[in-house]
Image (cartoon, rainbow, N blue to C red; front, top):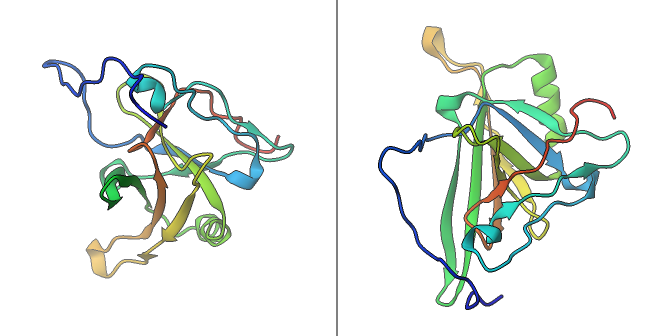
Length: 184
């Protein structure tokens, strides 16, 4: 893809605007194999169109997104540029810490480890939009899930799910609806 037709490229920041760090606590993992219709950006001539998804994910019959409730202050999304000269791609990362070792959480973690995902976590700017890690081209994978029972009276209990993907964009912005959660 050539970016020569884009107009309006600029990276700016305006004083006084909302720009909260972090991600919302209620996110979703959607196994790619459970998706009937994949949502993806439709690039036009604006920079924002390269990273914005306005269509909705449609799930296969009987499938639904998997809710992940993560702690705000121990979860987030990162990106970094990878690759050689004139051959760059963004590495996208998501860490979501879930502070519980309940049997349901441990069993869910066991079941999650070998799927490919679209991960959606809310932006904190009241837009109702989500950061998306993974795409129709390269899905996100769980690369690690360290956790434990904690040690002593101040130990940390739970699991930190780490997902990674690669893409042309630093991260995508999903503006569609979240498919219904629970059995369809």
